[in-house]
Image (cartoon, rainbow, N blue to C red):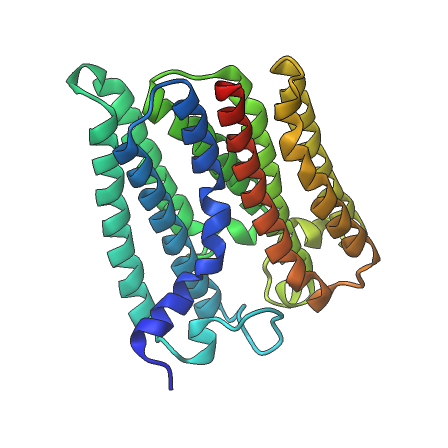
Length: 305
């Protein structure tokens, strides 16, 4: 019998956290080499992002659980409501507490990042924080859950890519670095690829559960092609970024990830679908995290070179 702590940890899905903080690492890594870096802002950026991700995981478990999408036919790890480990009411209270902690963390982060002369920028980020909380919840919760209308990819790309990388960099430096748009696109595309794999895996169950995702609309064959596009364009953006940085060898370092991504795409190509996609979720998530570490390593080597 599992205790409550282990159940809540299971509901939080800690394995999803490396992917969620990849963009934060890149944005703060660039801020560090630019000489505008606060360790407190970095810590609260990580904390806020992690809380948003945990909130999203709670909401996903709750939304799919009460809708019956998480059922015996579903492939992948069983969710806590599905297993009867938490009731919907318990998980809903967990969402409420996580929402509160997320909001507090976001407000502390904004308070650390801006002074009274930057009120409009602070208000803008407060709005972004609220939008992030709403987006985390509404992915699967409610009748208008956007994850049930093939819109999840757009939100993952924006929040895991652009907002995570460019937003965290701005909080540290108070300016935008245009070249960072390319790494932000890469992180966003790789993160979207994780969602797409999840949706490819769950196509049959999603279809009977009236959950419309892009693979449902495209079909498995074109869903795979879309997946190749996400990974390949993400790597091409890294190549372009290296050239924009003067083609210094160090900025080609993240392209080492061509090897695991390439092997992954080969496995996806020959996959028949369903459960065979499940182990690939971890591969792409950890490869994206490794990509972010290699990119920050390149930033630092270039600074010290």
